[in-house]
Image (cartoon, rainbow, N blue to C red):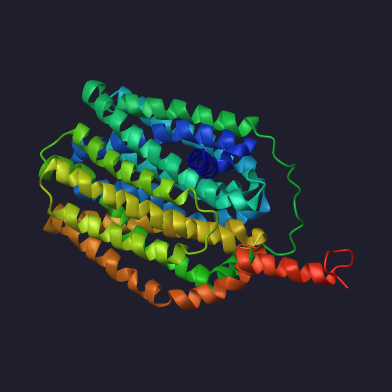
Amino acid sequence: MDQEGNSTSRLNGMFRALSHKNYRLFFMGQGVSLVGTWMERIAMSWLVYRLTDSVFLLGMVSFCSLAPSFILGPFAGVISDRFDRHRILVVTQASFMLQAAAVAALVLTDTIRIWHILALSTFMGIVNAFDTSTRQAFVIELVEDRDDLSNAIALNSSLFNVARLVGPSIAGVIIAAVGEGACFLINALSYMAVIGSLLLMRTKPFVPVKQHRKVWQQLQDGFRYTFRFPPIRAIILVVASMSLIGMPFSVLMPAFARDILGGNANTLGFLMGASGIGALTGALYLAPRKSAVGLGKVIVAAAVIFGLGLIAFSFSTILWVSLLCMLFVGFGMIVQMASCNTILQTIVEDDKRGRVMSFYSMASLGMGPFGSLLAGAIAERIGVGYTLLGCGILIMLTIVPFALQLSRLREMVRPIYQRLGILPEIASGLQAANNLTVPGKEGSP
């Protein structure tokens, strides 16, 4: 009975953020939408490679869809801190739906051209710049109990990677059967779920705060706060370097699936699905954690796993070996990114959350397109395998500076954890001291 009770307790702990109604609505709406999003990603990469046979243009499309996050991210963070995040998300999700519908119409009528893809990808990137920083900051509004924040972030990662597992697998079958157009249409319809979930939420009325500082001044404040505090700066730099060096592997997958493994769209779906299984495993590994304590070491270990998985993958010419490697790649990637996100969300001040998370979005999404463009250009010259090998080696090298300064960063974050009551032994000690000084408390004089 004790074992059964412990298992039930662990299970409840793993999904405790779902006890909050608004978060539960967000979780369900996002779940449907993300499956559609991953279907579109696979369909888009396959469509571009089918139309152009160019690895460079694969990188260019990724660049157009993500580069605006690098340029507009800081301004989006200021907007997120100044205006109603709930309304911003309704507008951005509706804009995503219109973009997906336009792509679907062009593909289904066989009028799609590469310039259409580049233009619509750029539009999506502009919308994404505002959506990502706002969504990252909005999560804390959906979870009333801050103790459940790390669980909510881990569940978000789990959801993302369930969709990453399911979406590509479905897309591979649909592309082989009827073509890419159906995937884009399904994605457009899937946004209705997340928009509906946002409209059903009952959030606290937004009360505008009278702003005495201009947007540019607030942007400067956010920049100083982010980059003058070493723990936040170190996390942002880790995310940026991993996005620049590590994330381009997904952009090169169509070329790897077709040219190295001799496969088709189904092969691409299997590879991305395997990465999704590994990432889902990583997210579930993080879900039971009750705080951000100890995640620094987890970040280092996850980066090593990510790098080694990519190195092994670069040498593979056999499908089942490649799938096995992708499990480790997906696991290391998501554990590292989710751990960085959790630490940031825990230590950042609430009034600067939107701006800090906009810099996080710049690092995680804004650096990716530069890496994709660079990886695509290098792969054209030296091949996909050698490019992925280089990415894996660089991932392991770039985590070394963070690992060397980890103990110093931990000491800087410790006072914040004490103030938030995250360190249990310190929190209980403070409570005991409080009991001795507050009249009427047991043990007071």
